[in-house]
Amino acid sequence: MRTVIGSAALALALAPAFAQQSPFAEYQRMATESAPVELFELMGEEAWKKKQGPKNVSLEQCDLGQGPGVLKGAYAALPRYFQDTDRVMDLETRLLHCMTTLQGRSREEATKRVFGNADNPSEMEVLSAYISGHSHGMPLRPGTSHPKERAAYQLGQKLFFHRAGPWDFSCASCHGEEGKRIRMSELPVLYKPQHTRPLIATWPAYRVSTSQFKTLQWRMNDCYRQMRMPEPIFTSDATVALITFMTVTAEGVPYRGPAIKR
Amino acid sequence: MAGPMKMRATLAGGYTDVRVLMTHPMATEQQTKGQPHFIQNLTVKVNGKTVVEGQISQAVARNPVFSFRLSGGAKGDKIEVSWLDNKGDTNKTETAVA
Picture 1 (spheres, rainbow over the protein chains, first blue to last red):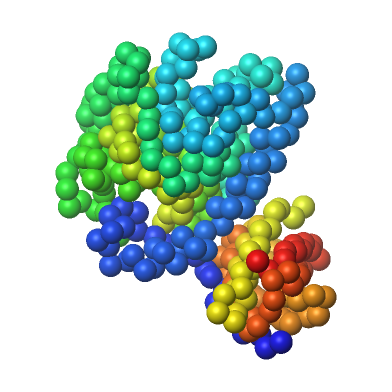
Picture 2: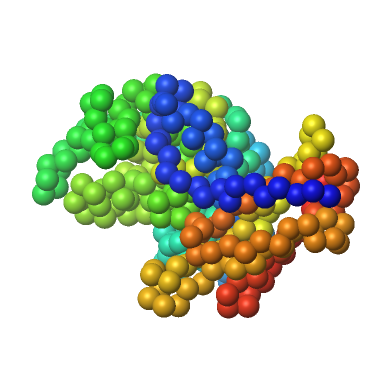
């Protein structure tokens, strides 16, 4: 049999938004095809099925909103209101809830290392990859009908425009005006659906520049760090509200993640 | 310990396209100040017969993806890809052509 060695696909950078118009479309397609995301999904499957915690059970019976253990479409319907906790939860918030209730782990232990690094991705990161992968291709339909869902959207909107910190920054300082960029990254205007859709449709994602799989909770955390604000609490109402605001803004977009980013 | 690998092999238009993902730090000499850790040898076997023996360098990204196009092939052919790194760690994965 004759053999030809193809290209060792060195996954390179990738401009994020505006995939349709961008001259980088072909390059983006190639990067998407060689994304190592599937490796994280495999690690996530292992973490999902791993028995641990004082109760020595896996997360397999975790109810992500579609019933205990139902993964298909669960991510596409988040964030949403959960009656059992009486609050709006995003994926990571719900996972943390399952870790503390189902597995009996302490919040302290379960959140000790929520953001990993390239050598050692965190449990939250690999779980996010695994679970979001089960919503690939489905339109994002976050909760918008419950009063608490509407309140989360409104709080998120308020936070998005709220200027604070030593630099008097808000999310809108970078993401509120069209035509802005940082180096080669186009800055999407995150309260406009046409800008928010391609972005929210691809998180969580593998970032080539750092070789890490990153979640939306990390994205919120890191934006606050870049704004020189105090660190937001993991899965706090504020972070969930911002994620809700952006996901509702992007509502209806077919989910293309977990994806690859620059 | 070696992380997961994932492979897909599909037959179309007289060719078998193989795409394989592997977990590896692929750390260079410079990054590690003299303790590089990277995949050196890559072996592709079809039904037990070696068809590719590749040598790769540090200059490949972390968690690399490789694709190969094999001429011919049949559904059900067993493709095996294995790697050996400079520290002697190894891993392999196997799949049937679909």
